[in-house]
Length: 249
Image (cartoon, rainbow, N blue to C red; front, side, top):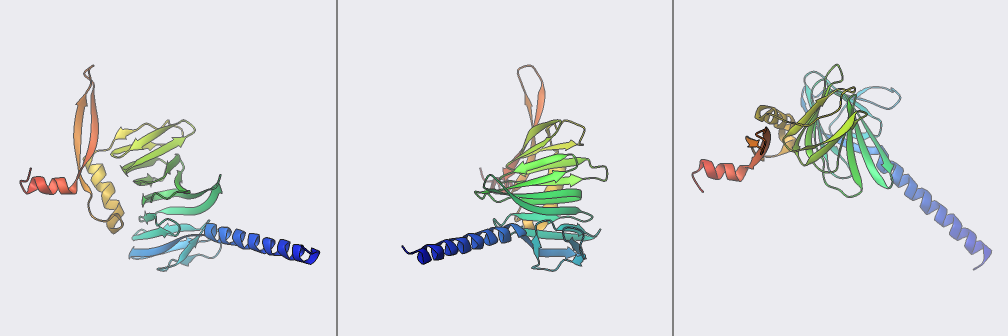
């Protein structure tokens, strides 16, 4: 191979490498899009660094570092562009979307500073999602859950499907479906059963983004050998509920 051919090969490899890096950076920058604006439809998009605020538009692309702020009468739905995961942002909520890479895995982080969100995370190899709050972090790989942060930073995480891992400097806990944690930054997280009313309210948060009702939550009391009673919440599939109501075995 001549010197000129080798130099051309090196130059081509460099161009391809730069192109691949550019595509990777574009994928990281283009995090999600706005696909539903409800009620007043007023959600501010604030770019990183505190640039000019704009009102969100349907179909608008959202980038890493963008902050979303809904009005007191606005709900918005966001869809992640890589795996189709869905995020529902409720009124008076502030959330920052960021994207990065850790050990070859794309990590999406939602920093919820105030308010409430519902999310359904698609199972997609090579991606994961975290919700960071003033009280700790909820980490998931494929599930459905609700997170609330009040004005004092107290955080509630309630799992509707799958398992959520919640942790802060005081400890960690797994939250299977039907359980919740309510905690501040100075307290160790502890799982406890959600009530049927809390679960119904959480399912109402997701709105149309959650699809059809998956079933009915029922409370089951379990007593161990020592006589201690434990509460367990179970979701009865909608088909089973329908068959029972219709008198079928």
